[in-house]
Length: 292
Image (cartoon, rainbow, N blue to C red):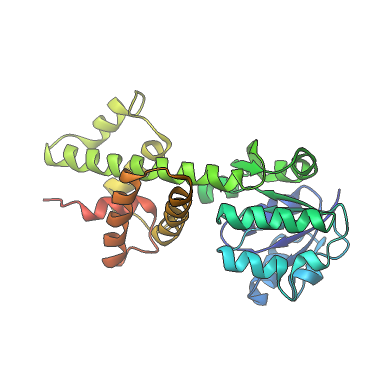
């Protein structure tokens, strides 16, 4: 078992850290709100975890530092800031970032890490809160071969699939592909559901008929029933989805790709925010479609 640091104990990070503790690793944890870190230690620490007051303090004398924070600025602060983890990490240590951020900062951190004798892995996740709770996340990783080899034994604690998609930054770019694809999927699902309602169909029978065929998807399997019941107070928030799509649009402007459907769905999500759905699950997209 190893000594590890985990930075960021939100909905996703707290669950990933829980699985690491359950696997027998010793954890030092940091969260911007100290009380949340203390509460995590009390609930999940198993007598092998402690909370500290800075990322640098967390990163002392560990084999790996893992992070799941909010955005580019948060990530830069906890790694390269005055009390950032990079200044305390020993040579050979691996930094594993599960935040969804820009590919630009992922590549920057890889350069900084290399210059300090560290490894850096950008490893955004998919699978949602349920995947984090169950330890079945899919990780898309950008790293060197040495970096992914160093990180994999720790990431296996909370994932069912780890894919090394390419060089540093490739993990973040792949996550953008994921968000672009599922934006279109959830919009199509919303339209199909409202169409079935307008036609007076039995929605359970519709789901039974189409979910096992070419139209089937994770979103349909996991969100059809809750969308029918107008339940959205869970899952991946609309606000975060718009942040992620914004990252994809920035990258597309740089690489020349066009994302017309994603751009349209992003406008629809702005409407959902406008009616108070910013913190609701992305399936709240169906709310903007009229229902008689």
